Image 1: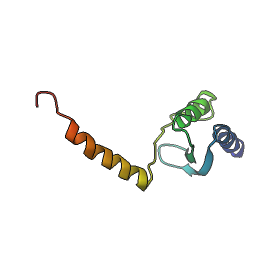
Image 2: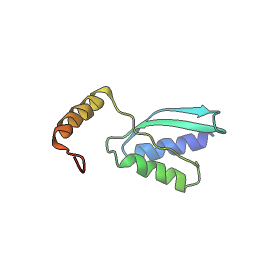
Image 3: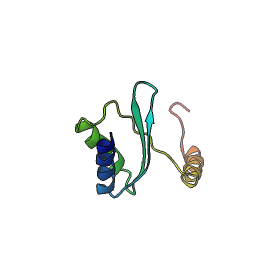
Image 4: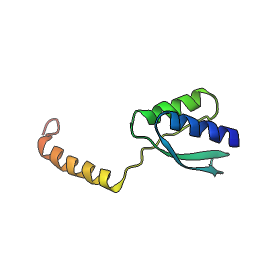
Length: 90
């Protein structure tokens, strides 16, 4: 409902985040997909947990989205770690 959407938006903003978009879904029963941005990665699970605890939503799934620049950094770090890692027994 519009009231629930506004409540979710307020929780995101209270955590210093921004609601990017919100979509209704028909897959796996009626549902909602909420895309939001928060400056602190700890805030996302806190927001999700608070909304679930309120009873506004159930069966929440939190997925971290990565920018292309972040993925590049992840790949560079993986290259560094490959050289430093020896598997057990290897």
